[in-house]
Image 1: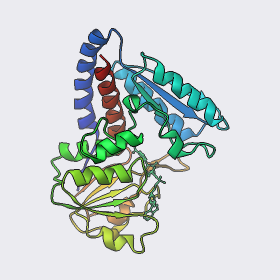
Image 2: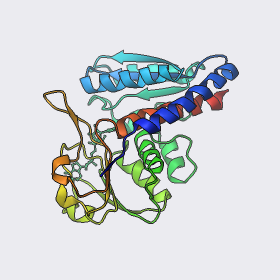
Image 3: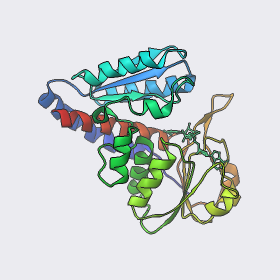
Image 4: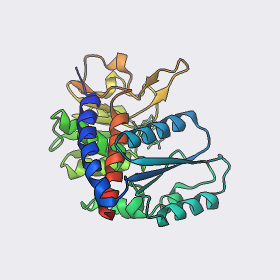
Length: 281
Ligand code: NAD
């Protein structure tokens, strides 16, 4: 089984980005800048935000994290986002998910100016993506497609199964796979027999947020499996939505967790921030 590790892809793309950033700094008169908003003290979110900021700095950007307590009022955060939208030194604005219960996704998705929406969650950017004229690439789905392309795994003409339909992964991933001429099956919590549908997939993408959900009986032999899930065990070990022991010997390729989709997601975030800064220069 081939392990579709992100490392070689990220190393290559990071080096390219660093040299393009050096040029852009001269044109802009400053480095690209990413502002990240973190609400609450969820340890996983703190880790992800830390990784995003340090990757941004490694790429030659500047980055700041703006923290709010978990009970912050939506209006306080919205006001901060307005300031970042209006600030000409800020290229990208990201609000780390999950949001606290008082903040509704459908409202928050409208806050970040579409030209700075490097997470690609604003309805305008989703609309541009779905109609085939993307301004930004959704970070996790975009990273997955780059990974498959790097390893020469064809998408066109394949039957693909996406498990999950979230706004951040499942839905934009389905759209991007359709644009690459795959035939799509999408399953979710209300699908009566997801395993039966999933077994039709040449490529299977699991973004359910359910540890070890994907077992042997969900897979056709020789398929390619992309594991988006991230779960931290009591012992600190990270695992995904795939039950790796159960599926051993069934797929021909699998993305590792950690070291697969996660680093690709960060890479696309940086490339989106670079694109936003280039458009401003
Ligand atoms: P979510 O909870 O918003 O959505 C989960 C989706 O999976 C839902 O549509 C639900 O219907 C479906 N689902 C849940 N259980 C199912 C089941 N038993 N059978 C079929 N469908 C089922 O989650 P999300 O934000 O899309 O994240 C999913 C996972 O991916 C999480 O573990 C998250 O931590 C991880 N994630 C990783 C990255 C990364 O960079 N690697 C990025 C985003 C999310």
